[in-house]
Amino acid sequence: MNLTSQTYWQSTWEESGTKDGFELFDDVALHLPRVQGLDFFEIGCAPGGISAEFCARLGYVANGIDYAADPREIENRIRSKGATVGEIHREDFLKWQPERQYDIVASFGFIEHFEDPDEVVDRHFKLARPGGFVVITVPNFARGQKVLHWLFDRENLRLHNTKCMNLRFLKEAARRNHARLLEARYAGGQYDFWVGGNHQLSWLNMRLMWRTTRLLERLSKSLPDGVNPWFSPFIIAVYQMCEKEN
Image (cartoon, rainbow, N blue to C red):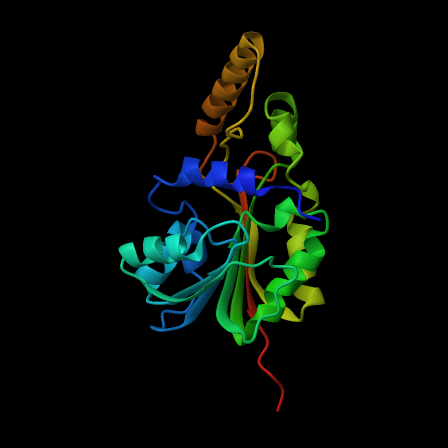
């Protein structure tokens, strides 16, 4: 079951529509092949900015699926960034029956919006060709981050399944799907925190949130560069599919 709605995603796209640059690009691209013309498939690809960045910078062909956006708008945005577009599908990912596999299959903040993220993750691997790559990133709303979101962003927290926000879940996906795990780790620095666009807090809670997050931000700056499972804002995993046996 999907925990979100089309309205939620349209609001999210409006917030992110003017942003340039994907904050985890370097973390992910480090593990991907530099081969022109590979087919890149993004699950939940609206509004198109992330696919555009990967495909324009690495020479891939952009493909994807999204159930709530007009494919023509996504295609236009990708092309405007200088990338080549293959096929953009407007379908429900869990019901869609693909006709082929892809070189790189990726989702960025997608699997955590379902009650059964295992099923959603497994469909990623089925879409990737033998020898191909699977990329999954999720926000970290677990552990210390979960406390902050429960206090200051509770409505948004309900739309995120924290079951998949740990390294054990991502490592188990590799074993279950017979893939090689290239990397699974926290990312985005020692600390960052944001709230959903539709949150409503009282003046007192707003002040409390500001003081709490400012304190944590100052404390994080005193730590050495790195990440931690309590407050780092993202988790990434990159896999490579096994080649077919002769």
